[in-house]
Image 1 (tube, one colour):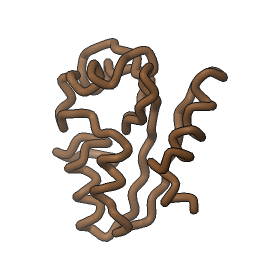
Image 2 (tube, helix red, strand yellow):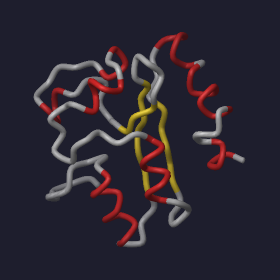
Image 3 (cartoon, helix red, strand yellow):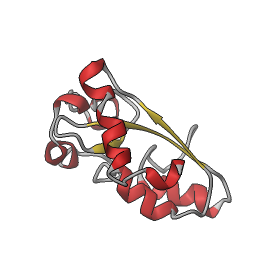
Length: 118
């Protein structure tokens, strides 16, 4: 959700509010160092958490421990379970470098996001 709101962007509570309002879901996803897909807009966590942790350089466990207001930072799998076909989704992959761009297709092949593109 954008604009003034008590809901934190990219939190499961914000996505649920979108669904309840009949809106579609738009999110940004990033890969963690261990190849997990998390829902997070910025390349680092500073703006939302006060921590300068770079998402792509952190392990999923580190990202999940951030003091995120809608704690914990959701994974793409959690968001897909929440939406579960109730609304259209736009997912923007925010990847840097050749080493990471290849990871998104492998996650797709493993079935995590295959249902969105099949």
